[in-house]
Length: 350
Image 1 (cartoon, rainbow, N blue to C red):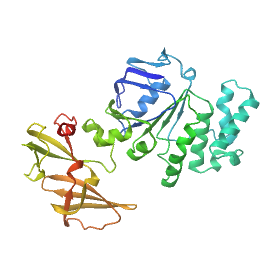
Image 2 (tube, rainbow, N blue to C red; image 1 turned 30 degrees about the vertical axis):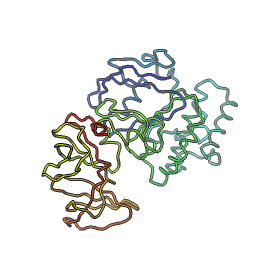
Image 3 (cartoon, one colour; image 1 turned 180 degrees about the horizontal axis):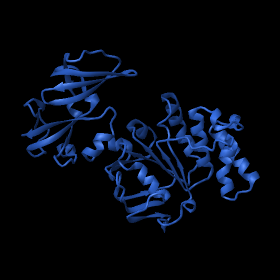
């Protein structure tokens, strides 16, 4: 087991504050957060590339906080395709095994097997410059996997690939990673859909701290706080001001957003979370279109209500003009309520 125990880093741009978590072997952990939240700094701390100002890192109960990088038994795949340009594909994968003093004939066979696994065996003699972006990333992944490292880390490894390649590798990652059941797998991303698709366990990082953790579905359905809710949905959840009055949810302009069922929440101001798919065409709420985005087979509509702005997600392609007036309805079963200090209080109404 890999354990982070109250680790902190005094980084001028992206510090970490008292990060604690236990990572088990054989699980795929996704670390989700916005750019600059501290995701990469966690990986760099594990590698020994960032000095801890507090706390410790343990592997199987052994403190490795001060262990030199090459003795930490870790592998890191960056978003850039870091391959050795003067070596062919096979020698790129063999290289870390030779560094481990593995016999060359054994290293060669392990590398060949790994290239078969990632679908590159026919390209073994090519140089990285002769490969596509997706193929280069497979080489980097194969080189990391072949080491049988106890800790395998991937820092947004698909971000520089085109959409088709990202989708293909997302589908293949679980198969590839499950070849390393004794390894702890950490994968950082800024994309909620990617995290939901890949993760066994999900960590949400916000401003250098763990804002939430757990099963992806649980975090999506019941985000514990505003910080988690803001990053776990794509398109993002919209937030408007409101207040509870005798079991009713009322918008800032007096519009009644929910008629009843909130008697267990004390009267007072709340922050209201509206999921993009909670809004649909037709209904009693009047809005004006700010912007329409076509995203494949879906349409994202930015709306301006008298009580605030919100985003609506529709299946299919819909065209609206800017400032067009449309009526929409709101599924009150999906409304989320947060206290002014950001805690999810929706469950208090159940």
